Length: 271
Image (cartoon, rainbow, N blue to C red; front, side):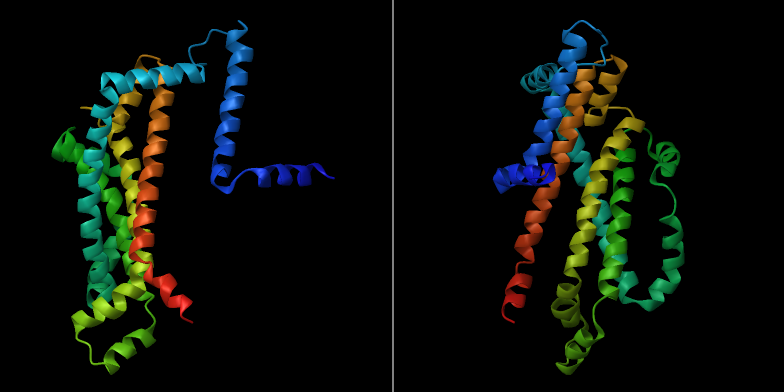
């Protein structure tokens, strides 16, 4: 039996729900092994090489002291405001561009030009307008959330089959009925994709805003503190927290999408 087949058999013996833990466990094992071989053996005393235990202890200290909750709540507060503002305006603008050819001709060229500008290019202007406080950070996050929602809303509305609209005309639907009963269900998957991307970009932009507009509390500021004091365990703990929060937000939105769009599976199952 080849080594590839052996690896496949070993992998399939792992329960499906636990297979996602295989790679993290391997990374943790390699990390332990490298730290033990380099640091514990006395070959190096570099502060950049910390053990998983040191990161765990730093995390416990952050939790018990309350510093983690203060930083995390500040970051999530900024992200929630920025995401809410950016995605709401993005839905409105995307719906306008997707539904009105006149609006697309009038606003479309400007929008498609602005979306080519790097998000971080707006930082100097935002800092001049709003300073380095929460207002500038929320504005930056809102911009990050805005563009993916507009693009996916526009794509979703434009991809509605013409036959669906003809059905609405046959039943003499009003404009509102057409939007609610024909266009919105057909475009819903694309809309949720835009919102999901918007949420991911909002979380990433939150960290970028806190890192570049370094004032106040936040997970990004925790990473800055670790860098400035050369606390590698704090930096790695912050990275783990960032990844776990992003994973949780994505899983929450995916569960919401499955619940709200469950009618798609029921509809397909009828045929």
